[in-house]
Length: 583
Image (cartoon, rainbow, N blue to C red):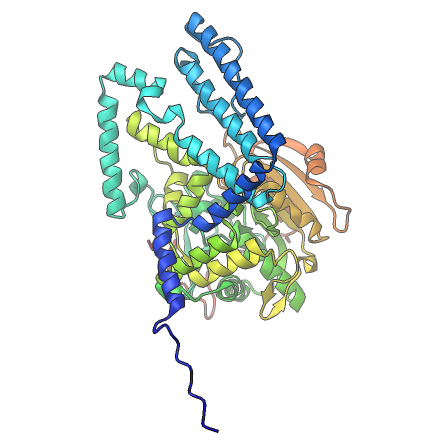
C-alpha cells in the first residue's frame, strides 16, 4: 500500500502564538484584568438575581426605604442649614472619607448621605444572591465598590467642601499647585523616574545603611552578613528570607526603625537575602530555583561561616512561604540545621487568601501567563496596580485629591519610598506560585513538590514564632493562623496592630502600637482563631522585644562574634550590595 501523505495543517502559522498575542493586546486595553473572568462573574450574579424574585423585592424595598429616609433627611437638613437630624446611614468604622465637620453642612451632608445609601444598596444587591459562587460574588461586589469609589463626591472639586473652602481661601492657588504636581507626575511616569521625594531615600545612603558585607552572590541572590555591634553574640545566627515581591530593606529602613539593626544591637549575628530584580534573562527561574539558589544556598553559606551552629530562620510574606516549604523539605530529608522558624505575615494555606483571591482564577492567570511569555516577567506596575485597587481610597483617590485638588504633596517617608521601589517577578516562578499555591493550594494539601517529592508541613517540629497583622489585606491574619492545624509544633502566635508592612515595621517606641500573644504547646489541642483572640493577652507597644526574648530563650550563651565570610564565601562588596539597586 502506498504510504499515507501527512496531512498538512490548514493554518500555516502557530495558532497558539496568535491567541497569545491577542490576549496580550486585550490585557493592555483592560489593565491586565481578564474580561472573561469579569463577564462570567457578572453573568453568574445577574442570572441568579433575575431568578430570585424574593431578593428583587428586598432590593426594591431597600431602595424605597432609602429614598424615603433621604427625603426626610434632605428636608430636615435644608431647614436646619446643616445636618438633618440622625443620618440615614453611618459610614463603616474604617471609612474616613466624610469624617470632617464640613461634610455635615448643607448641601454636602445630604450629598454624602445619598452616596452612602447608594453604597448600601449595591452591597445588598451583590451579596447573598442564592446560587452565586463565592468567588463570583466577591468579584461582583468588588467591581461595584470600585465604580462607586470613582464617583464619591469627595473626588470632585464641585462636591468636596474641603477643596472648595481651600480654593476660595487661596484664590485657586491650590489648583495651580495641583496642576503643577500633575505635570511633574506625568513627566516622572513617562521618563520612569521615582516619585517626588523618593530621591531622599536612596538605599545605602539614607536607608539600608546597617553595616555589613555581601558574602555570597549568585544569579539570584546576594547574602549579606551584618557587622556585629556587641562584644559577644548569640552563637546561633539568624537568616532573614524576605519576599522577592519586595526589596529586602523593608526590614532595614532608617536606623530608628530597622529590624535588622535592632537584632544586631541585641547581640545576634544576622544574615539577610537580597533578591535580584529579575529581567528577561531570569524568565525560566522557577520556585525550585528560589529554593536552591536562594534559601538552600544561603543556609550552606551560613553553615560554612558559622559552623556547627543551628540557624534561626525567619521569613517575611512570600519569603515566609518559601521558608515553610524549605523547612518541610529539610524535615522530610533529615536536614536538622534549623533551630527555629519565625514567619511574619506569611501564608501556608491559601484556601482563604484574602482580597488577592479576586484576581486568582484560571482565566486571569492565563492572561498573565501570556503577558509574561512576551516580556519574561510580571512588571512592577502590574503588581502595584492590583494593590492600588484593593485599597483604592488610601492608595489612589485620597492621594489624587490631595495632590491635584488640595495642591499638597503628601510628605515622602522611608516606607513610602521603599514601596515605590518595586520589583519584577520571573514568568515561570510567578505562574507556579499563582497556580500551585493560590489556585490549587498544593502546599497545605500535601501536594507541593520539592526535588520531585511532595512535602508536608506536618513534618515540621521546630518551635515557631508566627506574626499576623490586624488589617492585612495581603495575608489576612486568620489565614496566617491556619498553620496551627497544619503542624503540631509549638507555635507562639502574635497578632499585631497595623497592616502587612506597618505591622511588621513596628519598632519599640512607635506610637499607637499594640499586640496580642499566646503560645500553643507542641502537640496541644487546636484552638480556633476566635478563641485564641478571646484568650490572648493584649499588650501595648512593639512586639519586637517579645520576639527577641523568644529567640534568646532558644539560643545558647553569648560567644565571640564569628568572622565575616569564610573559605569560598569571601566578602565581595559592602551592604546593601548591588541587587537592591537594580531598577
